[in-house]
Image 1 (tube, rainbow, N blue to C red):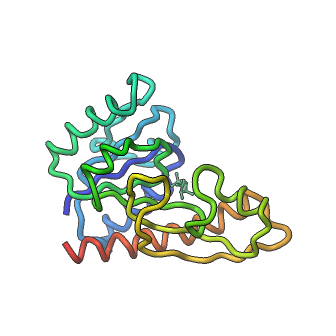
Image 2 (image 1 turned 180 degrees about the vertical axis):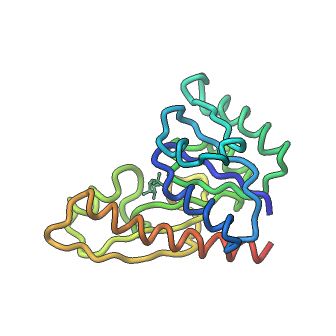
Image 3 (image 1 turned 90 degrees about the vertical axis):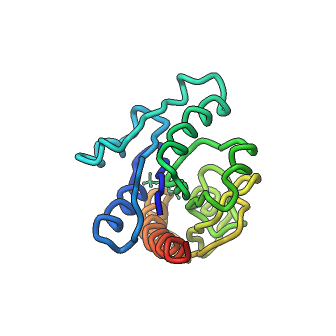
Length: 188
Ligand code: GRF
């Protein structure tokens, strides 16, 4: 299965998938890493795999539709059949998502449908929930609303901060992303 990984920032989920593929825990080919932010910290983490990286900075495009057109040229040439959003911080257009129906998965740092959108960890702390976690889901036309593939729970203690909660959740994100991806690849 030919996959593309989209990322925007730190790239820990991106690197986690890359490592799992390198270690043959997932039988997929990462044909391309697409980054929409030329300053993303994750770029350096790719090291020798930067050959497969394409930086398509969204600042150079007048709209998300134009950005997507450029991206899709690469996806088609490379015969991509699954897009893994791994800390990808742009909202894809409804048209793009429709064209790639059930072919895009995303990781979100809350137990959806709670705390959609940005700063999910802060939202959870502000609300005062005692448990949060992460969700891997298919991407549909509504933000953070596609079919849930898997979730993992973390407890929140009195002393937790956005930073400590983010770290706890990331550990779980990395586990469920690999499991979900492995299962999807096996089925295809
Ligand atoms: C993760 O918390 C992910 O759930 C969210 O953005 C963050 C990205 O982290 N969508 P990283 O760039 O993968 O380290």
